[in-house]
Length: 191
Image (cartoon, rainbow, N blue to C red; front, side):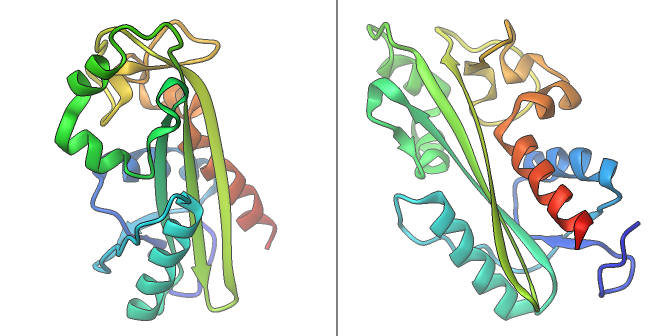
């Protein structure tokens, strides 16, 4: 385990999304990095930039708890919908759900979409942001029971499975979050 300056408790993660926390821990564990959920509140600004959203949330949380932490912000960008829902993915998921997105895509042949994650890390030395991106397509119906959010309707390039049909290890090998987490872990391990 890496020494994190706050004992061996790990790096704080500011998130209420247990799926994100599980996925990040599954990837980071391989690098000897442990995450722990923190009591800080994730404050999200309205912005078209997920990097700006993650940076703002990280700064706000760090000012509250003064401990090394990470914040993850992700977006689903559907090409035929001009990048919608983008940084509003969580809100759109709560309001429309999977069926709503499928309905919006009903007569659209171009099913291409990308998931993007901005993972912001902050400590007393400053902030770094790591991006992960994966492209694929929106399926015509939900498939699989794993994962969370849009996972049942997103199939990454190079796979015949949706994220919801994959176990966490397989999903992390493809996913935007897995890529961002590996970039962070490689950087953090060199410090």
